[in-house]
Amino acid sequence: MKYRSAFTLIELLVVIAIIAILAAILFPVFAQAKEAAKKTQTLSNIKQYGTAINIYLTDNDDVMPQSMSQRASGTWRWATFHPFPSGWFDDGSGGWVSPELQNQVAAVWTNAVYPYVKNAQITEVAGATNAQAVSGDFALPRLKAPYKMGFSMNGLLHTFSATSVNSPSIVPLLWSGFGKLNFEGRLLTSPNLKCNGTAFTECKFNPDQPPQPGAAGDGFASAWFWGTAGFSSPANFSPPASIAGNNTVIVAHVDTSTKAVHIPSPGTDKSMDVNGIFTQIDNTGAPTDMKACRISPTGTFYHGFFRPDYDGSGRSFYPGGCDEP
Image 1 (cartoon, rainbow, N blue to C red):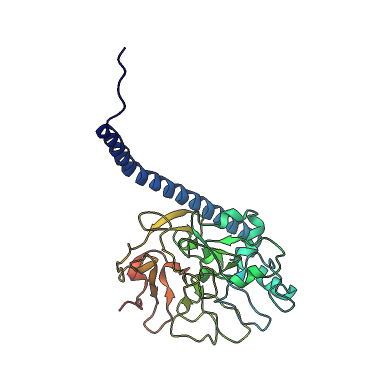
Image 2 (tube, helix red, strand yellow):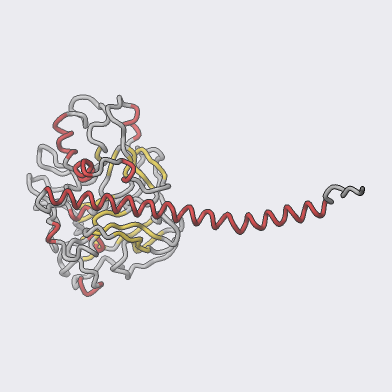
């Protein structure tokens, strides 16, 4: 009986080469399938959260939750990372754990709506980087588990009447407002109204005027934020805006319809695009500009994509112009 000798070196090299070619073909397919699954999960999460906000609206006279908290003095914390959930860490009397501040923070949208959600996992962007918004919080005694938040409410809807939204299927309610990033233990609203007045007054979207009497500014009534500040971990992290392939962010509209919205590809400039979220994306994929528009030539700028009165008709809606060069 004859026995076949072992594989020759050439045969082994051929087999290895075939395996390498198959791997090169299949690995990108697997990666794309994984990204698609994450995108689908994020779409499901934001859809559920948008539905929870709409249930909240039925119990609160169709008035949107607060995008920020209000101090006892009447001023608004419009650019502040708020604890999520309220009172999860103990920073001592007079701090965020105090009953007074906990009551103020409980009115902020994430904490106000959470009883309708009861599932911290649907607040996340699937596969995103997790960042401790204020890393010092995690060195303090823990009273509850901190939650992660990868979405942002449209801050221009702060205490706005849902029935006054012109086009509920167009105006964003929630979006993946920090790209591939989940904040741990805190939340920040972006974009948000610049409620920096010192008087004890309400602050609300006002189509061609500042949102609050006495609000100081440079003609812009809203502001947007991106990435982490120096006190975060990881520090100074500027994530890519796209949460999936094909340069997309996720948006849930006021009517709870949800979709993936395309943004410019890295290194491109879409400064003339009124209907987009971002107009400029740097080479790393991080956004550098968001279009702001006004109704009259001497009016106040609000970020156009998020305006509660926007109907999606494009540049014709803004006879006052946009902040293009």
